[in-house]
Length: 122
Image 1 (cartoon, one colour):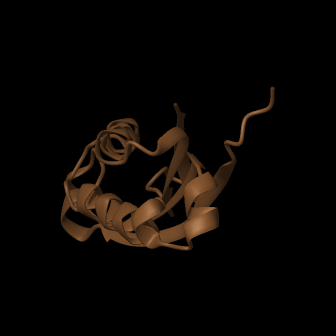
Image 2 (tube, rainbow, N blue to C red; image 1 turned 135 degrees about the vertical axis):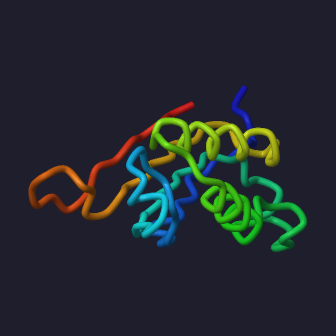
Protein backbone atom coordinates (compact mmCIF):
# COMPACT_ATOMS: atom_id res chain seq x y z
CA UNK A 1 0.00 0.00 0.00
CA UNK A 2 1.42 3.39 -0.98
CA UNK A 3 1.14 6.51 1.10
CA UNK A 4 -0.61 9.64 -0.15
CA UNK A 5 1.90 11.76 1.73
CA UNK A 6 4.00 14.13 -0.36
CA UNK A 7 7.05 15.91 1.00
CA UNK A 8 8.84 18.88 -0.48
CA UNK A 9 12.07 20.76 0.12
CA UNK A 10 11.62 24.48 0.74
CA UNK A 11 14.79 26.54 0.37
CA UNK A 12 15.24 30.04 1.74
CA UNK A 13 18.38 31.10 -0.07
CA UNK A 14 20.90 33.82 0.63
CA UNK A 15 19.06 35.72 3.33
CA UNK A 16 21.36 38.66 4.10
CA UNK A 17 21.68 40.13 7.58
CA UNK A 18 23.99 42.69 9.14
CA UNK A 19 24.82 41.55 12.66
CA UNK A 20 27.39 41.67 15.46
CA UNK A 21 28.51 38.05 15.91
CA UNK A 22 32.12 37.19 16.64
CA UNK A 23 34.78 36.63 19.28
CA UNK A 24 36.69 39.83 18.60
CA UNK A 25 35.56 43.07 20.24
CA UNK A 26 35.78 44.85 16.88
CA UNK A 27 33.27 42.40 15.36
CA UNK A 28 30.84 43.07 18.18
CA UNK A 29 31.11 46.84 17.62
CA UNK A 30 31.50 47.22 13.84
CA UNK A 31 29.47 44.17 12.78
CA UNK A 32 29.57 42.20 9.56
CA UNK A 33 27.40 40.80 6.80
CA UNK A 34 26.04 37.28 7.18
CA UNK A 35 24.28 35.05 4.69
CA UNK A 36 21.87 32.37 5.89
CA UNK A 37 20.70 29.47 3.72
CA UNK A 38 18.00 27.14 4.95
CA UNK A 39 16.60 23.96 3.45
CA UNK A 40 13.46 22.53 5.05
CA UNK A 41 11.70 19.26 4.32
CA UNK A 42 8.00 19.37 5.06
CA UNK A 43 4.85 17.41 4.24
CA UNK A 44 2.89 19.25 1.53
CA UNK A 45 -0.04 16.98 0.60
CA UNK A 46 -2.68 19.25 2.14
CA UNK A 47 -1.45 22.64 0.85
CA UNK A 48 -1.02 21.12 -2.62
CA UNK A 49 -4.76 20.43 -2.62
CA UNK A 50 -6.14 23.41 -0.69
CA UNK A 51 -3.88 26.21 -1.99
CA UNK A 52 -4.26 27.75 1.49
CA UNK A 53 -1.34 29.27 3.40
CA UNK A 54 -2.88 28.07 6.68
CA UNK A 55 -2.13 24.50 5.57
CA UNK A 56 1.47 25.20 4.57
CA UNK A 57 4.77 26.05 6.21
CA UNK A 58 4.72 29.85 6.05
CA UNK A 59 8.09 31.04 4.71
CA UNK A 60 7.50 34.58 6.00
CA UNK A 61 7.25 33.24 9.55
CA UNK A 62 10.41 31.17 9.01
CA UNK A 63 12.26 34.25 7.77
CA UNK A 64 11.09 36.30 10.75
CA UNK A 65 12.26 33.60 13.19
CA UNK A 66 15.71 33.61 11.56
CA UNK A 67 15.80 37.43 11.62
CA UNK A 68 15.04 37.44 15.36
CA UNK A 69 17.81 34.91 16.09
CA UNK A 70 20.29 36.88 13.96
CA UNK A 71 19.60 39.95 16.13
CA UNK A 72 20.85 38.11 19.26
CA UNK A 73 24.64 38.35 19.42
CA UNK A 74 26.75 35.19 19.61
CA UNK A 75 30.50 34.72 19.78
CA UNK A 76 30.51 31.55 17.66
CA UNK A 77 28.81 30.64 14.39
CA UNK A 78 28.22 27.18 15.87
CA UNK A 79 26.14 28.70 18.67
CA UNK A 80 24.21 30.98 16.32
CA UNK A 81 23.47 28.20 13.83
CA UNK A 82 22.31 25.88 16.63
CA UNK A 83 19.97 28.57 17.97
CA UNK A 84 18.42 29.00 14.53
CA UNK A 85 17.87 25.28 13.87
CA UNK A 86 16.53 24.75 17.41
CA UNK A 87 14.11 27.67 17.00
CA UNK A 88 12.83 26.33 13.69
CA UNK A 89 12.04 22.90 15.15
CA UNK A 90 10.47 24.46 18.26
CA UNK A 91 8.28 26.89 16.31
CA UNK A 92 7.32 24.87 13.21
CA UNK A 93 6.03 21.35 13.83
CA UNK A 94 5.65 20.79 10.07
CA UNK A 95 9.44 20.59 9.62
CA UNK A 96 10.66 17.02 9.14
CA UNK A 97 14.33 17.74 8.35
CA UNK A 98 16.35 20.94 8.20
CA UNK A 99 19.74 22.18 7.07
CA UNK A 100 20.90 25.59 8.24
CA UNK A 101 24.06 27.25 6.93
CA UNK A 102 25.32 30.54 8.36
CA UNK A 103 28.17 32.32 6.57
CA UNK A 104 30.18 35.26 7.89
CA UNK A 105 31.34 37.35 4.97
CA UNK A 106 34.92 38.66 4.85
CA UNK A 107 35.88 37.23 8.25
CA UNK A 108 38.87 38.74 10.09
CA UNK A 109 41.24 35.84 9.43
CA UNK A 110 44.44 37.74 8.63
CA UNK A 111 44.02 37.16 4.90
CA UNK A 112 41.52 37.59 2.12
CA UNK A 113 38.60 35.15 2.31
CA UNK A 114 35.06 35.35 0.95
CA UNK A 115 33.39 33.71 3.94
CA UNK A 116 33.50 31.15 6.71
CA UNK A 117 30.43 28.99 7.29
CA UNK A 118 28.87 26.54 9.72
CA UNK A 119 26.22 24.08 8.53
CA UNK A 120 23.99 22.03 10.84
CA UNK A 121 21.57 19.29 9.80
CA UNK A 122 18.79 17.69 11.75
